[in-house]
Length: 183
Image (cartoon, rainbow, N blue to C red):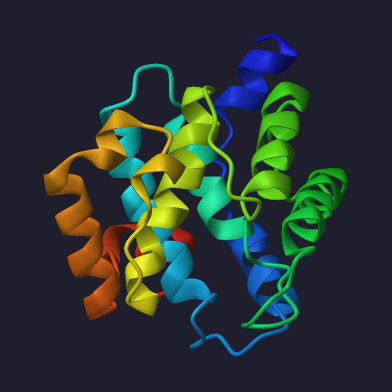
């Protein structure tokens, strides 16, 4: 098996990766940008990826785990995306995030840009950013349609499902179990 094929076959969510992210997270785990938020972003992302041709569902889930993992404040923290991108690179260097260089570059771009309010034509980044924006429901905020990149995110059933998850603080047990954050 060649190196890219081997890399693609490795599991992205290892217990060591999740433990490192949680251990190094600096905010209260129950806060609005913590693991509950990450799990709902992952669920939104999985739903969007299923409806978006060309989207890398596994990479979208990694984004959900990492995009806010370097926040220093629950409030305004304008550099947290850049710190998350650097964290991705560091996790890769340490062997905890096992993805190829092209996927790592895409993940870093998405993390660095997710807080800037843009949209993307790349299907994977589009799903990443939309998954996070659909989770504004936890703050009782509805995402602005002009800031959603995918048609799937703009669909009323998707908006309603994400709103319900976010407002209710729902956690997807399957994703949480895969990440090892539920017993």
